[in-house]
Length: 313
Image 1: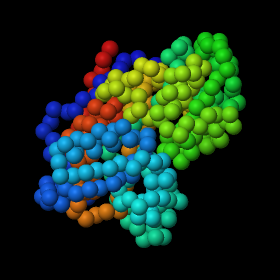
Image 2: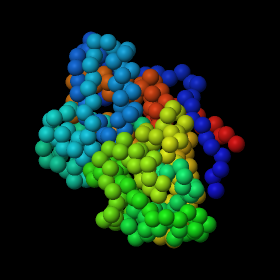
Image 3: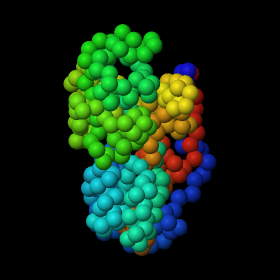
């Protein structure tokens, strides 16, 4: 079982600014750092996107960036129909979505800018500390309705009727959780759908018997410090072939960085815009040293900059 935490920091090596689409936006500063821009943003990663936009505008005071927050599926449709030329989303395109862009002869540039995690959260009054994928599947499909009927040393730890909250359909974490944890089974008919992450946080805080899932970006105070008004559980995956239960792993930057946490997601820049303008300037900033430092501060994991993991015993 994993017990030692890992702290993630930037490497001390000298880092050259990462460039987007092969262009250094400082070459044409006036074009890439001035003007107005609206970018579509996945609601799950909107906290870090908001921080990125604020810092970019502080550094480039002739720019104005507006974030339009929607679900990933809605944003991909908007990218296809030209509503937005650049979007920030929490998953890759599906084959069906890629085929639609290809049929419409639209080229899409994909760039990773952060690694995120889906936290399974409960009310802090719940004494449970861990759940495996088998238990989670029974809970979120509605098969299991009482806390006491869990597996192994979780059995009878807590009693009460489980109140299940889920992210709304078309949100990236809804689709990823369904695929990875439920093995594409349907969510329970009595699961309560939260239209926003703010609602999810409120429901878990106010309901002692509640459980839900949320992007790590929404429960991070700063770096590896999490909001203690909800409690993220340690999670263990289950081998689909052997049924073997893996290690229980905490929701933590270090375990996302070393890919041992079982519910990792990626944040991507998807764009159809290849001209030298504010869209490219902001996209370049996201993957630059300064942009990746904001990713780290927001509790996520940088992907374009060297990092070090320091084990804390």
